[in-house]
Amino acid sequence: MIDTLDKLNKKFNNKYDYLQLLDVEYDSDVSQCTITLLYPYFVEDFPAQDKKEITDFYQEFLSLRGTLKVKFKRSFLDEVLIVDEIVEYFKSDKKGLLPYIQRSNISSKQEGDRVNIKLTLNQDVLALIDDFELAMSIKKHIEKNFITTAVVEIFENEEVLPEDIIANDILPQGKKARRYEVKVEKKLVGGDIMPQPEYIGDNKSPKESVILCGFISKINQKTYIQKKGKRAGQERNLYSFNLKDETGSVECVFFCGKTHQKVMDGLEDMFMLLMVGDLKIGLNDKLTYYVRKISMASPIEMQQKEEEIEVEEKYVHKKVASPEIIPKQTQGNLFEVKKEYNEFIMNNNIVVFDLETTGLNPEECEITELGAVKIDHGEIKERFWSFAKPKNPIPYEVEKLTNISNEMVANAPRIEDVVYDFYEWTRGAIISGYNIIGFDMKFLNKVADRIGITFDNEVVDTYVVAKQSSIKVGNYKLGTVVKALGLKLEDAHRAYNDAHATAEVLMEFNKIN
Image (cartoon, one colour):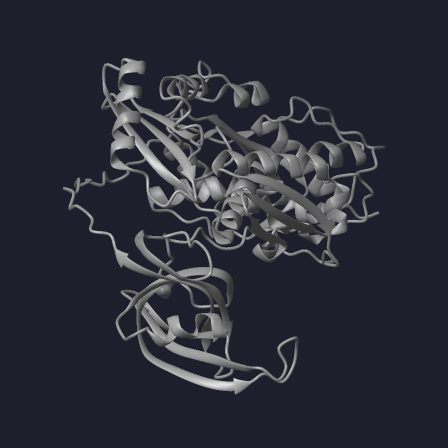
């Protein structure tokens, strides 16, 4: 596709040399190719004639048998959008660091065509990563998704990782915000604002750099003399008003300098405004929106589309996998000194499991293998294993990592049946695994929700147990911990092998010395 942009610019004498390719999708079901092109934030509007010219070029150049759709997306360099994209980067590409990343660790500042990004991390986390590689990876990701030059700096912060890590500490925080589109009519205060606000009703707690939009009312203006800071002794204006959309309302505050006083005085009730600001607990102990940027906006008229009615098919279980007894490898020895374990191991049934998947995102990727063992009062006595056939092919990179090929899962059962059988086997047991709270449980619960079951077992993450221990390791990967404990892990990245090794790790950490 890069070649096609070169061809495009050669044909039109570099008229479109500012365009950047964002995405190419092909829907084989309807034989439609969709190309998404980025254009810079400083281009106010992309002329319809130019859009047609580019679309005609691609139609002719690609000679597609199906239909072609070319989308044009403006590359807003809004700090909220940049930070959102960095968070998404960690969710998809750097999942292991996600537990230690909050939005407050990330800042973005635009300087002309350049974006300066600063990321702060705890010193223990920095010691485990290549910060230069991480900075370059974020830079490439941002420059791919925006028309900009990104400068990424990583610093050490003063945060201290807690001594006692509990399960909730390693859960990713929050969900991706719901957004909708509006049209920007005129900038009033500050620079560009991404025209994709969040719903007011979705924001019920303090949050930095939030884009909101709605109709204003109850505008009130106060004048005061600033007592502290660089502007001490100067007269300033404070405007307060209510902002409301279809989901809720919020009180707003804007500290206004002389430059924007005329603009603010011109506002009237029921004006539709798009704004950027911080949600904080105000002096009235209510959630208050402290505004920094303001633009006039209008709703986008959406063409009504016929909704496809999906008929939900009721799940009917078919048994496909059963646990097996693990035979003892050696005969009993009267002189053998048996390991002794604490009450946690001796008084419980613990199922230790592991998954192999087609990728890292549970919303898009699928389970290809489930393997588990059961620790029964101090002994690993049973095992559970099955492949599962994904709906989409296994990516080459994943196949290379796990040694699970598409041919191996071609005749495997559907994952819904495997998970249901696993669910029945785990009743009454504690569930464990390695980093399962941050990864495996998400995939497992996604399938469970689909078939109407709930894994309400107590969950003990062996990754957390390892981090709470006194073991001295360079990192807390399963293979590293296994080696440090003098155990073995053969054929890593296969579900059953990883599950068995994790069970041994869990038992070792609960051994009575």
